[in-house]
Image (cartoon, helix red, strand yellow):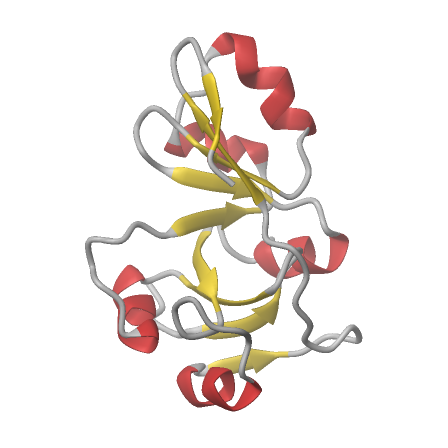
Length: 145
């Protein structure tokens, strides 16, 4: 497992991504108790990480810029943005966090200092609205954000 922290423009905002939770905890100076979002380019990987209740499978498959928290407490987003998806294809999945200090706006200097590898595409780095977060229960859906 690689412990590099990548600085990447995601489908929603500028983010730190890594195969190692510990590397992200260190980069963000964050409590290990806080869970990380898992991003992947493939639904087949999502299926190996968590089981989607049958009545929500179509919703999960068709959703864009949406993170789902599954009954096993894992927060997973399957990325459909072409440029970000191309980066994610090299990995099964990556842990993800925003590239800023907690509850603050994106600061390029902070992000560059904390990242091991900077991947800037033709879009540059920019912030947009965060992904929608939906908690999936066995029988209910709850919109978190």
